[in-house]
Length: 461
Image 1 (cartoon, helix red, strand yellow):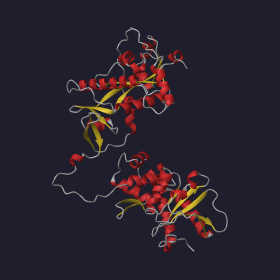
Image 2: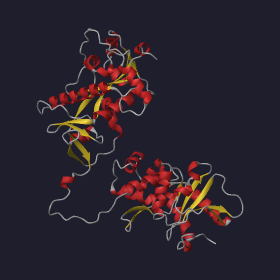
Image 3: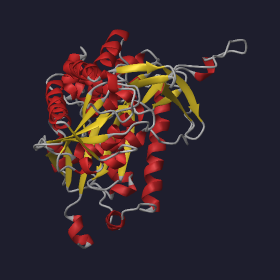
Image 4: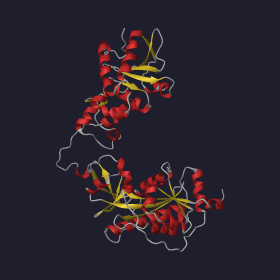
């Protein structure tokens, strides 16, 4: 496609939002937040929100950003005309300016005013993924803008103006050096063709400044954030900005006269729970409900984005059979339980924990006489001196064929008596009925064969 054809299809994405990773602080100026924080929680640290405005070339990693305080919001028309006149990478006026419906509703006269200068305003439908993706990318990029302009004073307005200069300088630098450093050659070529287009300067038709209506839509990104955790301010010499980081301030951990603990308990409950939930027969939603928490709370906890209170943490650990191992100095999946082979990495991690690094002789159980289950293969994890764990592996799946690689010392197929095989199948079926039934049914199964535990390769007669 030549440049003339491309000129008739120029499209920009326009978005406005409270900045997800940047805030204002009366002493630190612009503060970058590495992990997003709700606006209400940010207030406790003396942080106030700022507004991000941005234009992105559709389908390309070329964007132009600017900012303002909440009290001194910029006119949308002023933002657009400034960008189209000065942002080299945008190549001037587009044919189409695509926005989300909230932005369009905030300024109902914008479409008519843009039409006067030859730009068609289009509202992205609910299924459009491109405009939200452009906004997400802009949020991420803004959090890593280098501080190259020092504000004339420490006022909030001056700090935001300096941030705007940093953003505009970053855009011009990137537009000037082209697509160097990308691994996608086709994308590089698209960028090169775009940057070769002639500039389309906006006509000198004045557009009146019209106030636009702010609302909750500016901060939709905070709806899915977990409860806040302790944070502290830290100066980043690379970006020359102060950052608000998760955790306790390391400078306040210990003093010269404080007693340093030689041993600290390693709390890896969240990691163990994440792997178990990935292999649990029931859905994460069912597991969360059985533990008395919401699915979102479970997801936040297992992804280590938020903690659980002591009671909920205890209930989840008991449900999943997680116990503290003094020898290992951490929490481990003690079982016994029934697992389903879904995710290779999670299953391998659980096996390593249960077997103590491979001290087991796992094997697939098949009936010595009669037909095996047509849907599932049953693998016994028989670690030394511990209750057994059973893994149900769906027949015909790739992960099932990988079991010998995922479980160290895998012994292959072991024929067992039809009675024992039926007990295995029946126990698994009962254990899968509800999250609370899993460990309970496997404990009963383990009691029936308790005398065999001392032998790593145990199997009933």
